[in-house]
Image (cartoon, rainbow, N blue to C red):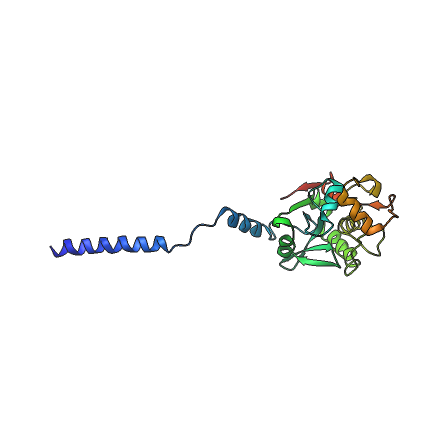
Length: 224
């Protein structure tokens, strides 16, 4: 009889304990949380290599105008940098600088981004080529952002930085150069931004390289 009572008591304890653990367990992450964790997990050395190009939709005041004028989702870009065990994005903002990868990703719209890589990166981006690319990039470090998109080295904007670093270190032109007049300048949003930047004297023949042109370069493949 004692054994029966003891067995019943143990069963009761196990039942109560299981209910308690279930009610106090950590709930599985929601789809939104899980997605955010996947984004964070991809922001590591396995997702980005030295010399990769990374694109996002910027939250800057000019982002919408760039998207409309270039007919592209992406309005900002940079180059992946590895320093020691850490990854950075070398980018032309105000001023040109290196930004930790996770911080760069978090700064874009929805934390979303795309990584592109030279199709023959293993052959072209040798250690010496990457060292040369970084040396060229360091010449722009600390320079002011170019809000009027002029084709000079005095100031510089994001896609111009990428294009010049690649062209001067490897001889490759990542993206087709265009003139300002080649873009769709018909939107009121674009017109307002152009008026703000140039006034009545819009330099229609200025050479420009857009994030969209770099993104769509046939020399690149999508990594992520």
